[in-house]
Structure formats: C-alpha cells, structure tokens
Amino acid sequence: MPRILTAMPSQGPDLKTMELARQSVTLVRPGRKSAVFSGAGAAIFALLLPVFLILFNVSYVTNSEWLYDYGWWRNDIANRTGLSVEELNNGADQIKEYFGNDAEFLDLRVNFGGSEVSLYKEREILHMVDVKALMQGVFSTTRWSGIALLVLLVAGAFTLKRDAAPLLLRSLRWSAIGTGVFLVVFGATAAINFGWLFTQFHFLSFANDLWLLDPYRDFLIIMFPQRFFFEAAMFIGVLTVIDFALLFGAARFARKRLG
Image 1 (cartoon, rainbow, N blue to C red):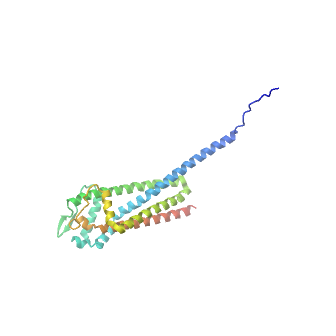
Image 2: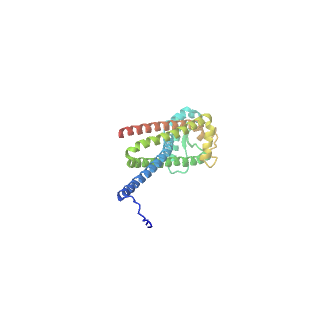
Image 3: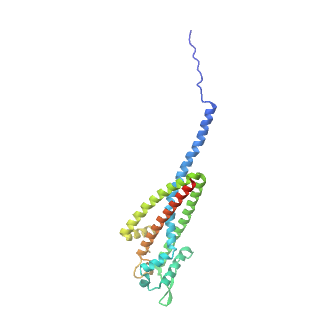
C-alpha cells in the first residue's frame, strides 16, 4: 500500500516571542543611535574646545593692558620711539578700539615732540586694515565656537544625564592631549626659529606684502617688534594650559558630585 506523505507546517514562533523580539529591536536601535550621536558630539567638542580656548586667549591678550605695559618695558619702546609710556598706552588703546569699531582706517594720533601727529604712514595704515579683518575673524570665531560648545554641553547634560560627566572627561582628555602636542611643537619651533614661524604666519594670513615694514622708520613695527609677538604667543600657550587644567578639575569634581 503506498505511503501518503503529508506536508506538516513547521512550528513558527509564538506571538509572545515575536512581540519580545520586536520590542528588543525597538530598544536597541535608539541606543545605538544615541551612542553614535554622543560619540560624534564628544569628537566635535574635543575639536572645538582648543579652537575656542586659544582664540579666546588671543582676544583676551589683545585687549589687555598688562601685555602692552610689559612689552613697552621689555623692549625699551619708550626710548626707541621717543614716546612716553602714557602716549604708547594711548596708541595701544586706539588700536584696540579700532579692532572693535566700524572705521575703515586707523588714524593713530599721539603727542610727539609737543604736537599731535598721525604716527603711522600709509603702508602701516593699510596693513592695519588687514590686521583688523583678521582680528574680527578671531572675535567672531571665538563667539560662535563658544556658543557651539555651550549647546553641546547642555544637550549632553539633558540627553546623557549621569553619563555626561564621564564622556566629558574623556573628551577633555583627548582634546588636552591633542592641544598639548600642538603647543609643544609650536613652542619648540618658536624657540628654535620664531622669525621663520612669524613669516609663515604672515604669508598664510595676508594676501599682500604690506606687512613688510622698515624696523627703523615704521612706528608700527618699532612699537611691536618680533619679540613682543613671541612673548604674547607664549602667554597665550600658558593661559591655554591653565584653562585645560581648570576645566579638567571642574569636570572631575562634577563627576564625583554626580556619583
């Protein structure tokens, strides 16, 4: 008698198993997305932070008074220019004001030999137009990078909660390492040959040669010799290291407080 083969349906997953699988997929996918987004946010934070800190310190040093007082003394500028320290400070104040106002040209006027004169000649004035554009770019980048960092911090605090502090510490650590390497290389290069570094900076920053001035006749470069900028750069580097140390300490404190 021939056998009759009957195709029996294979037993599929029950409804409960299917529902659990669906829920697990729903739960895992957002977690992966959250990890990706938090990792990307941490990377952006680590890259933006040194940009903000260095440019913030450039802005701070540029608008300070102590740097100029130190520079006049360190480089004997009063004797080299024939201007009193008061008039040198007056000139520095006009430069700082020029960086922040809408004037196209800088007419730096000081009391020289008993009469008020315009200290800078045409080439120096035209170069200061380029310097102003550069400094306003620094101010703008500082402002927007600071806003971006604040947004990242707030978003991380709300979305990651207790995980935000450990992630911030890791981001700070990698940012500090990268910045430290950059500062060491920059500092070593500056110590070996700051003149070369200074020249390359001008080639990259300006599209003309108006920055090539006479150190014996042009008051702009007499007031601000190369050593002034070298020491300003060193101050900026030291301030940036201090900033990172303070931020790292604050992040560790916050992590301990949050448990």
